[in-house]
Length: 434
Image (tube, rainbow, N blue to C red; front, side):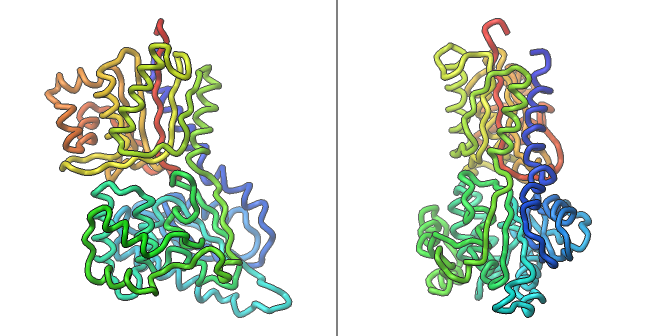
């Protein structure tokens, strides 16, 4: 292939476009019954695009408040758009969550409910990846610092997002179904872009509008299992039965419903279709790949070698595609990003294997905390790096894949994409004559 980079980038763009709120929201909005008033709330990296799609399609009065990551704000008619910190919660997130909860709790049309006529309006909650950090409201007796410390510690030790969310739900006054409790008895519909493997409603944004099947005992066990020493206030709260979240079957959540409008599968399907239109055979590893980034990379490298030798589940030339979310246990001091850590580990495992190119990037356009979405890798990656005096193995050990690819000029920078359905990985495996 003459220009593998351009082709891989086109795959990533197709994946992102397939999960764009403007594309995925209309069919769900078209199926909604008419309502004279809609209170719209929510948060996340795709919340603004979702809100704009909703406001453009819904009849009647639409008003409300959403929160997005700092720097990703914009206008939406009738909607107050707030900005807050991500991935670590900040005071602006607390203020935003307070406004969202207050809007739902004091929805003026609640007074219009009558037993005979039923609710004349609805609450529409729009959630996407990032909302768990953005909608931060500490439980009674806790401070933002308490939650920040726990979140930082869990992120740094490489705890999976599912484990982090168990703790978040039980330390929050809005997550784990508590936002839906505030809306009752007004019907609440949640439309969500999922960025969590398995698309579990309680995992997305820590489940503010759905019952929570996990327990405060599970939150305590998570902290213990990952060696997190919580503050006395956190310990006291988790020991208090009041920290328990509403469970499946709670009648106060009977008027709340939840629908996923797009997920990692949506993005992956978009890339698969694009690849096949271009004439490529595709090995689809699925949309829920998880694990330590460097371990996943080694596994994928072994698979690529088998495919290239004719011993794999597909014949070359082909593309190996996958979605999901890897994790990184931070042991060094570098500037990482799980997609770039995966890609550096893949390069080391392949050690310049002829003809193999790869791209790994986050569909939200932000890999970790930097401005890059991800990076490229090719057969010349390691030779060029070593010629520049870089130590690929040492940089991987220092969790400094960000600096590695930035130095090579191989970072992929898209800016925020307006959606968020987790990671995207593509590996191009050549045929014998390539």
